[in-house]
Image 1 (spheres, rainbow, N blue to C red):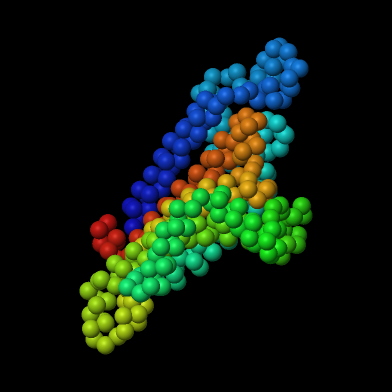
Image 2 (image 1 turned 135 degrees about the vertical axis):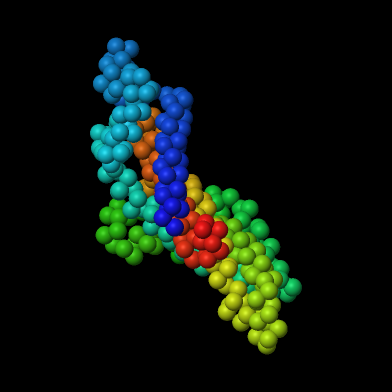
Length: 317
């Protein structure tokens, strides 16, 4: 097990290093000039050159990268070129919106996928099981932006149950108001991601129903549902754990898009604004943190899967 953990940790570090290089080089290809943003349209070429020199933008790319990644290794994510505020401070502030949104979306996705996926598999030969399967396919294909607009039209503008946009200026000082403003965007992401997860749960449940020990339990007098719950759901849980690692990436991407639609002051809106302003240190550090989060969750899922699945430990040994 120690060798496996060491290998996974090494692969995580390699992936982070490769990712940091790709992020750094990709952002340098984008058009635009942060010196022009800072200096304004009236800045002379000499003034723009002075701004670039002061920000270190004239340094060779290798030196710029080493300066940035060296700071990251010291847990210093840099400073915004436009505001002068440490990037870490702004990330912490924006994550107070994005992280609760992602967690709430994940909870809704699980509440949608787990029971409905099992029901769709157990009752696959009945009309209600077929309807659930079709609805899962339908909602999985719906773009999150379109679903968000429909939810705004129905639940916000139509029924008035949730605010259409915005987040309280005082943040979580009033928890219920902040939670209430996140419910509709979380419902948007959760339903779409839940429909995707529902298909995996249905497939895993069908596989479990066909396993020998489940069929044997049913042949000995158990109902099919009880045999599934007693002997089949552990294997379904293993499949779900594996898929959840992939779902985290979908939740983060969904949050970035949905924050724009619902005017939430999270990482998504900040990224879009900073890319337009060419605030490179802030953009590259933010993307690296999000990518690292996805990679770490994937690594944790692999470790958990190995711990709870004896077959994985036998293969490793």
